Length: 310
Image (spheres, rainbow, N blue to C red):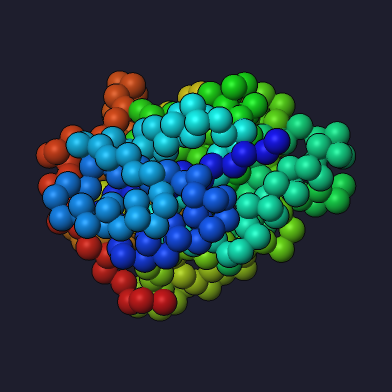
């Protein structure tokens, strides 16, 4: 019998998390775990409210990163008898029937003889996650872990999320690990998950919007501190998977390089963002994982994006 548990990672969340957890509790009969990733003082009332709603809250004294937080919840779910775990970020809210749709996608893949690692919604934040639909099964690439239903057998085969990455590209590394193990990610047709993206900025050069074929004239930027992790973890992933998935890795690297250049153009001060790039590259070479050094956090806090909203 299928027993799905839902795991949320949370760090200083908005009150909207209560709505997301309430929807999750209704979907899986209270088999919901929320992991507080070291939010600190001031959130005790929220955790109490989530427990009243029906979730189990696991509290951490320190901020350990999204991979470690999710892994803590996943382990707790598996220990409680979960046959599959559905993971969510704190700012994603499912619609009724979400779990059933993902399970149906896994069942459909199995009926077609496809070994599926996980199922995700076809659309995440309005963007299709589907890479190939040629054989009637929606296969995905660059799938996001928020809204990802993972059978227990996948964790048994490839392991949990990689905790030393801390944040950013955690789902990319997991997906690549599944792929080289011969497992495919699939999507539930038509299923959509809303999610809050970063702010979008106009792509400008010398004060004019840049519009080129195949390249949007807007760019979605992360919070500045995350660029340390994006550079560091990109180098880590390239080292691990370049020989096993060369086409995938080289394409992603080229796209990331363009994005990093765009971000550098509108960062102020640019030298501060470049310092994050350099430190991330260096720390990947030294095989230093985990959270960014405190001194770099102070550098990141000085960075602002100097571009008009899209």
